[in-house]
Length: 389
Ligand code: SIN
Ligand code: CO
Image (cartoon, rainbow, N blue to C red; front, side, top):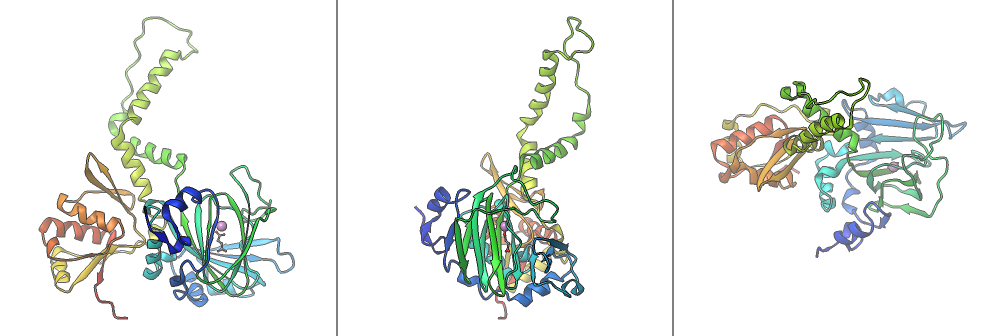
């Protein structure tokens, strides 16, 4: 039985997963006070202008707030001139730019890393919002600065109608059954499909910890890519045994079954299927955020070892593992990772979000080569153990 968690308002992860996760909202007052001092509105404005950042500026017309406009990144200073009264700035993947914010994921470690999407930050002044809407993903909305009023309503799905003619997928109505103002540190879990509407009460920063889930189409696409790389499968199949003639316009059930059987036999090939799914799930959402690494050799690592460096996951990268017949197999940033057996337990720790000291135990040529490779691919990174605060 796990411990009651402050972030969940004193219930256990088991209870949350059984009663709320993907089912119903949960409001927790003062769930994450640590987030409050991380960013201020100006930091978010500056971040939105950075190269490669993914941001959107959403405006509502002064004359008719039901008319919306969206400007997507790259954003420039000029985009913030002549602003209407109501606007919101959304900045994606801020966890890739702030280690302190990336650390906050640890509070949600009752959900595995492969489900994580990113942490988006919204900035709005009084009255600003992104409209009434629903998301297909689970999201924990955490108030970081100022206040936001949240209204929650009905469950929606892919058949739900949106307001026509707007650049955002907005709901015409929300049947309000929850109406609360969130203060700094408060958290609201919103399950997929639940209509929600958040309006800034004052200068307001809201963090969205988003969790993604693939759909079958995405997985099918990836599986078909993997199979199409296999040259052997490009050979035509041999014909069915022909012992009678049929009408020439017909494919008989027997012929159809034969073709399906050949196809399904390939789909039973779990090495390709596992590789396809693991590659997809380890793909970074914002590959441009994965920094270009400075080339590191094993000699540099020996020096770093003496200076007491730490190894950790690069926040914009994704590293996942699975067990196959008791053996650890890794995927990072959309590809399989081959490493030495000795390094596997350490890489597992890193994939689990642990920080690992670069110590004597890693002083092995194979391990150092693995570490150098992963550093050069920016899957992991080196941090000085004592940071100057
Ligand atoms: C916001 O922070 O304004 C929007 C977040 C959301 O609705 O998912
Ligand atoms: Co939303």
